[in-house]
Every structure is written in structure tokens, then in C-alpha cells.
Image 1 (cartoon, chains in turn yellow, purple):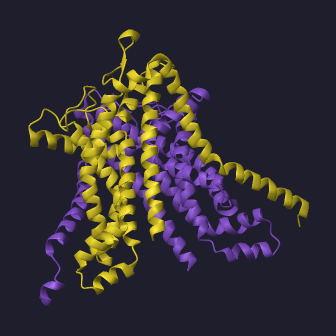
Image 2 (tube, helix red, strand yellow):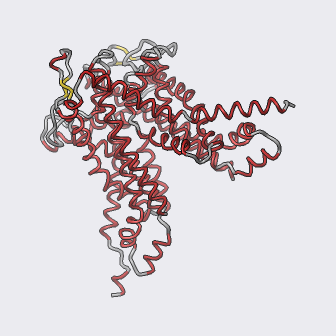
Image 3 (cartoon, chains in turn cyan, brown):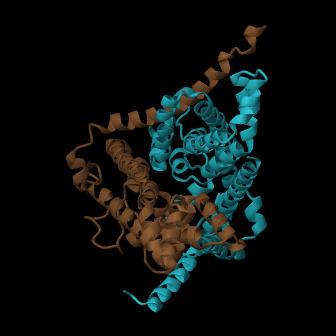
Length: 297
Length: 284
């Protein structure tokens, strides 16, 4: 039998160890933020921040005097493709979640839920590949374009990527609405549809908005699908049929070729910082809404 | 009047049914299209031979091995850190500001775009720690990416262990650490394993974080040590479908690669489900 002193020492050593490792998440989040900030500051010593946020042209070249680092076109592309994705995914996602939660029989649920999980498990690079081989040619044929690598293609793919998130979390929110609400509604003679539309959906609303925000956060930060399916033209896009270049795609394309510790290298960290702040903002809003929803229960 | 009052309108139901069908059709088209085009390519030779003649012929063996090795490193990095972090949150942490901050940090880490993890890996592992573009740097990067998922799922698993088991051990004179090591962790092993395997299936399909931390389009032979660049299935699919000189010639190989990648991810998911079911039975 080991002596008590040894056991107590072991106990306190491990307590400190667990406490130390427990801090790793904060350290990592802070580390990522500081890394982006540090490299962005190096960028802003070369380039005026006001030029960065007000110019629409992104054209880094080897010749320093001719390089233009304007955020607007990249930011607009990111927002455009995300908006398109949400226009497709929000009605489809909420509709599907309502169907699964309120209408589907137990047997159907047992098929639908794993199907959504399978959709969530498909790697983004495979979805991007679908954009090249199916959706791209489809769009080109349908609208008589030279190629289908444009914002619309990216929006459809991002919708597919964010659907599982929106469906699963909305369904949880609908499921969490107390049954007494529905009983009260049925009790005053409302039909199933009226109950769903006027009672269950409004009660689950904050949770559904949280689901949409999380899906949107996923779409904004998605790299491979937009990189493969949107053509990556740096011209300022005019609409869904134009080729676009998002923030994520720009980082993916240019980081591989850029020389270490040049203005161009630092510029990619600066746009990553913008992306980081946007996704963090979206996630924090989602979290506040989800918390309010939990309180409401 | 009485009749119309409880009658179900058909159109709203039909709309919801349509939404669900469209989502399912997306899934079926993706799977059917990839597998129908991949079947002629998939063969024992395809998964066990080296690519040759500028990638236009041969198989994807090095990419499969690369992905497997990468996943193993990711597990070795993320599991100890993730489990220890979850043990702290569930067994030691009291409700205070710091611990609330840790939980907020974990949820936000899960929402950070994977490409930013790639940049972080590049700046920290490749450049600052001089690991170079290597299997090690990419594995560490994916390990950090998987960390928040493993912490969350492990904490869920630890929560299912009834408090009476902890109290029983403590009452018999076990220290807190002994209780965790001998009672809490063994009772939640399968729950933890489910979460780890699921997070690995995500990591195995990730491309953006390994773009500039170590993935390469072609590496002679299989990587002999972890300081070398490596081939990986998702990166291979990306390169074959967008960057190859003769994209149409290698298209069948791209379908084959996509199919193998999806199979790898599904097998890991299936494994997670098997472990989860076993776990439910054990609890009964």
C-alpha cells in the first residue's frame, strides 16, 4: 500500500496539471487573436488603414508602389455569397426542421436525422468538387454562361454546407418548446398547422435565429467550397453571375506563393483578422440569443 | 362550421415536405454522382499503388497513408489536452468568472474558420518553432482545430457519470485524482471515445488548415518521418480537380479520390455510432 504522503502529493500535482491544461482554450483563442493582430500591425505600418478599408481593388504585386490592398471587393464577395447561401438555406433549413420536429413519424425521423448527419459529415472539399462537376455546368447551361464558376454556385454550395447546422439546432429549439404550450393551443381549438406556425415557431424563435447565425458563421468562414467553385476573379462583383473572390479564398490562394515577411504576407493576416472579427461577432450574437432562449424555457 | 375548424390545410404540410425532400435530394445527388463515377476507378490497385506518369495513372496509396498518419498525430495531440481540459471543467471548476470565460472561449474556438487555424499553424509551428512544412506541423494544427470538439463531447460524457460513484470512491478514502483515474474516466471511456472518433472524422476531411502547413501534391514514396511533407486525401482531391495541367484526363481519379475520402469519413462516423451504442447498452 502506497503511503498517504505520496498519494496526497500526487493528488495535488494532478490538480495543478488539470487546472493548467484547463486554461489552454483561453490561451489558444488569445494566441490566435494576438498572432493575427501582431502581423496585421506590421501590415498597417506599411499601408494606411483607411486605404485598406476604403479601396475596392486588391492587387498585390512585387512592385511596392503599384500594389493596392483594398478590402472592399473581398469583403463584398464574402458577404454576397453568404447572403445568397442564407436566402437558400434559411427557408429550407427551418422548413426541414419544422417537418422533422412536428410532422414526421418516429420511423421517418429515424431515417431523416442520420441523413442530416451524413450531409454534415461530407468534407467541404467534396462539396466543392460537386460545384465543379455538377452545379457549375448546370448553371452554365441554364443561363447560357461560359462557365458556372460564380457567386451563385458558391451560394448553393455554402447553403448545402450550412443546412445541417441550421436544421439540427433549429430542431433542438423546436423540440424544447414545452408541450403545454401546444396543448393550450389545441385546447382552444387551433389546428396543428396554426399551432405550429403561431405557437411553436414563435416560442422557438430565438433558438432558430441562433441556429441561422451559427450556420452563417460557418458559411462566412468556409474556404474550400468557395475556392473551388466561384472562379476567384479579383474584379469587383456586380451580382450572383459574376465570379468572386472571398477573403478565405484569397488567403488560400496567395499564402502559398507569397514570400515570408513581406507587406503582401502581412496583408493576408490583416484580412484574416477582419474575418476573425466577423465570425467572432456572429458567434457571440448567436450565443447571446441561445442563452436568452434557455432563460425563456 | 365544426368541420372546417379542425381541418388540416394541405399546402403548408406540402411545403414543409418539399423542403425536407430538397435537402434529401441534395444528399442523394452528391453520393450517387460521386459513387457512380467512381466505381469504374475503384480497385485494389487504385488504393494500393503509387501515382505515376504525372498523376494521370496509378493510385492514391500515399495520400491514404498520409491522411491516416495525419489523423494519428491529430489524435495524439488533441485527446490528452482535450480530455484533461474537460476533466478540469467538469470535476474541478467552480462557477466563477474565469471558468465562464473558458467555456466562452471553447464555444468561440469551434466557430473560428479553419483557414485561420491554418494561418496560426503556419505562423506558430512552421515558422516560429521551425518545424517547417511537415506532417508534424499539420498534425499539431489539426489537433488544435479538434480541441474544442473533444472538450465539449468529453464533458458531456463525464456528466453522465452519476455523482454517487464519485462520492462512493471518496468515502472509501480515495483522493480526488484516484477517483477520476479509477472511477470517472473508466466509466466514461466509450463516451469520450465516441467524441474523439467523431472529431477525427472532421479532421480527416479538412483541407484549409493543411494547405500551407505541410500537404504536398506529390511526395516520392510514403513519408518516413514526421518532419517531411506528405500527401493527404482532401488536398489530393483539391489539386486533382483544380490545379492539374490536364484536368479532364485526371477527372476519373478525382472521383475515385472523392469516393475514398467520403468512405474514410463514413467509416469513422460508423465507428463512433458503434461505440455509442455499446455505451448505451453498458449503462443499462
